[in-house]
Image (cartoon, rainbow, N blue to C red):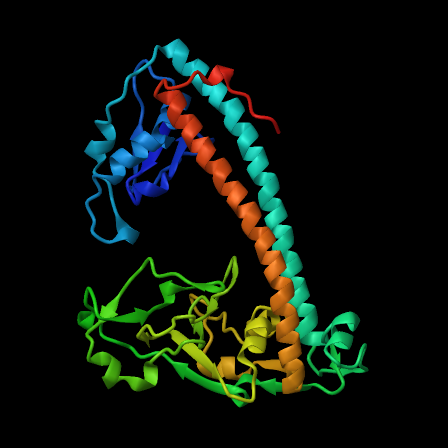
Length: 375
């Protein structure tokens, strides 16, 4: 790349993956998924804002060629031939400068709110981690009729430390059943039927169905050992940890019929284990530390096996105390989740405002030089 260009991604145009790329000290190449834009008598900063506008995004999104939502592509010709009323070069520079200033203010507000979200999430994780390894805080223990500040004992695990003396440490294989997924033939996949749970569907703390696959209806009865039940915990076995945490989630699926594909595993707690206690323990710092000790990093990609998962040890209090911990954590995490939700709504509104401001400015609906946002 020898001169500045605006790069617009052909892939999934609804996501508006766009940037103003400038020459670097070394020769820079970009993916073929991008279309490079430049034009005579055009301020590139203005062109970048134009391609970020809702008008441009909706125009491309209406012309995508692929049928799957996760892999939609726009035709480069539709990007190049986008129609717009062009202001003078001087006005383009003025609009771009004003948008730089005003969107910068919005971005700073968004950054502050995202920092708050991260702090709230860290507080949530710390609360869970402390409670599932040390027990309830004194006031909550007293309210539940449990001993306050019970004596501790060494757990025997470096990553766990001391635990209440009356607790046990057990391997997951002694607390429930672990099932590895089946290698279904991709040629059997259909456009509808029984849903297949794949690696792509398992994210940190949630299931993501944007990448959908199905099998014929009769497969559900033919492969009962690989049926995912409501409340199972599912794990990705390849690249089992990503930047956001463990690729593991609770399968809150209700009556939906789902089969487990290869390179995934599920854990189904036994009745003597409060499954909600296990869900909280699953996303504690100590469980992640235990999980990491079982991962094999010797291959091209990190992997963990169902046997390795079964060998993971967690602290286990008596069943009645598990229930008390669940009640306490459900209440306290709900408060934190509600705060996170409110801040996330504020971030969403700011981002919507940012997009609306850009769209109104580049289409001439408003004069952004008269728009002021308070920090």
